[in-house]
Length: 447
Ligand code: SAH
Ligand code: F3S
Image (cartoon, rainbow, N blue to C red):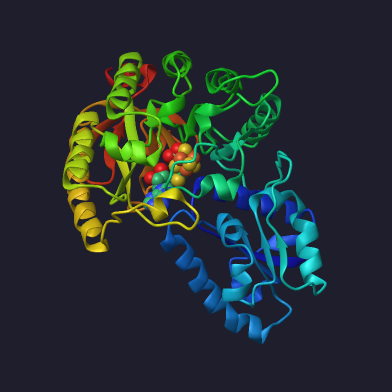
């Protein structure tokens, strides 16, 4: 068997795509290796969302140059968002690369790799292509939790973002294909799925007949054996009352909502072309908390968007406090080629971005710690997913609100079980707890 070394950068969708690539190449007699020095094919699945993500890839490609000089027959390929955004520039900056292709060409990866191995140099395949659902997975992988891409692309055109360019138009997979994939995963032991899309709550409007995420959640929920459903990423602009209702009505859907805010300032939101105001966002949070009082929120925030004033930034800090997020992913604005924001006036100096980012992190830490503290003493539902990293005698899992919990005395529970745990200690990055006895056990121990 030939050997494939796969390096994945960036988001969950890339992780998902990498698994498809490994699965497809497996069907052509490639097995995965963790050791790049013994690989026949090395593929980098890349991210282009911020400049730093691209720099990481170019620096890795620099490292691989030595390997390629020593073994010229090794095929080095660059796939994913950076492949599309940088295109032939990848060959100019890294001539040792043999193959560059976008996610639309994944279905053809065996053929592309074969051509590159036959000696075709600088093969470029970055055009859009019809959507296909690829369900190939690497063998031996029986995940307890899995990602399932339900739609590709994005048509929102936020002025800072390259995704509409790198991942193309919005295209949904038909519900039947998604359900078949979920059933297959569950048959292999999977208990939790995360439905993926760049704007996952716009799902289904391009299908005939049209459908929506609320309907899809209800149907996925009917798959026997599946315990939990998550989905990401939602856009506030597409958040419908039907989805709010589904959060309450579909029991397998977890009380966790990732709702990117990006900025708390209406002026900045308008320049970002996000399509909502801070008031609208707060209304949505209130509606979701009304429907599901335990709802945990996470968000994405950008600091230092062009023209962001101290007052704009203060409005972002204030929103963090008001919403009371469980988790925040914050980024310094990165100027991306071809995006409208890159040529906006009043770009914010790096030092100001860094200083604001540090202040934001301090507020986030305080707010998320306060949310954690509320969990002390509570009983939470935990999906056990393995041994605790720090204490191999203990089990570890996640709550429905996505917190890591280490469970002492887990003798009666095993991987894949959904158990009730009483939280005994709230630590900065995790919780500790003890198993809550089932009713029968409680009777026994009270005798
Ligand atoms: N589809 C998602 C976002 C995908 S990109 C959505 O609807 O929000 C993930 C996150 O990266 C974004 O939410 C944004 O916070 C951040 N991001 C995107 N472009 C960026 C840029 N140019 N600079 C800094 N952060 C950026
Ligand atoms: Fe990017 Fe905005 Fe789409 S952040 S992925 S253009 S919703």
